[in-house]
Length: 389
Ligand code: NZQ
Ligand code: ZN
Image (cartoon, rainbow, N blue to C red; front, side, top):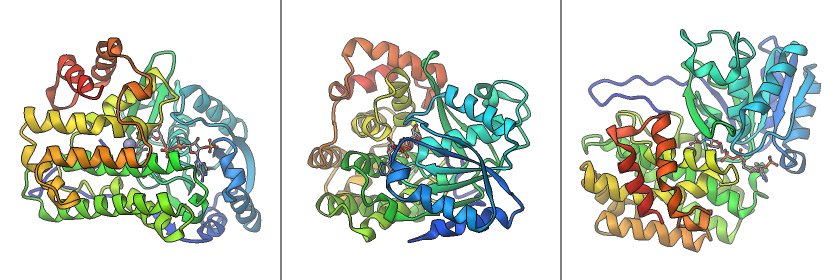
């Protein structure tokens, strides 16, 4: 999905994002925009968090200092973003002749900005951008100020958008739709609510594990890199539970989350699996209140069980259990996964997310409407979901 396909006998890596990491990195965003000749930006953001954590004000100060004008603001982009909000953004950007987008927020804000970037030049409805042939070639450049580490959208070319009416959530990777510059100041995240912190850690772990599923055991470098990321995320997750304002722990989670889906962690791993994400996207299409990381955390062990027993991934996940948790066998790894989630107060069953068993066939159909990986049928997907109850 978000990582290069291929293997050690042939892969391509491409990532042009300039990343500025660390305290006060946002103070540089105005200069980065102005130095590329852009004078008029549309700001995109979520609800109140950017006003509280300082990211909005620091961005405004930096824009002002570099004579960059804010010509419009698209506020209140919700988590699990919806296409209607992006339609509003396309209209605003066009009416105000925005030359670039400054996204202040997390994956939902950045993803909406990526859709807006292409939609601004698309002669049709922004929902149809992923199906344009050839791909939309003109785009508004995107600059980002990240406030929650989870998706790596700040350093990849993917976006995920949903249409509530159609009950569809669809991911799209445009070949060039990377942010131009992204600022990651982990200090914006020291006040992140615990539930959101865990969502981010879990999302990054699942990205790594979905990619890991593509291994055949020959990719020692990729697997060691991924196991290192997973160990760091687990350790930092436990650390943050005790000490949520610790900058170093926040910074380590931020860097791990970016690496988990910017192309590095999946290099040579044949694209990975993405079954966990496909199912989770269907859950949020049905109920946008389900947080992405929460759905993933619940589904991950069920998918591991299915991939291990049905498509020969047992050895790979046995290795994961050994090298990440120091336990024997993938089943023991799954137990360690669930134990950590429970320690962190995260849901571990579909019931806790508010779903009922009667919904399984509908969820499976929604997954396969978008596209089932591994040649799975709706019945296979239903069997996986059943395991998560
Ligand atoms: O709306 P506000 O007030 O900003 O609150 C947000 C939101 O409610 C809050 N938040 C963000 N920064 C904060 C903060 N609260 C306090 N302090 C801060 N510093 O966090 C909540 C969740 O934000 P959101 O952007 O939705 O989180 P996330 O980054 O996890 O993004 C999730 C979305 O990204 C998609 C998911 O499907 C979902 O729609 N994904 C995007 C991917 C990509 N582009 O590569 C890959 C992922 O797998 C994923 O599918
Ligand atoms: Zn994810």
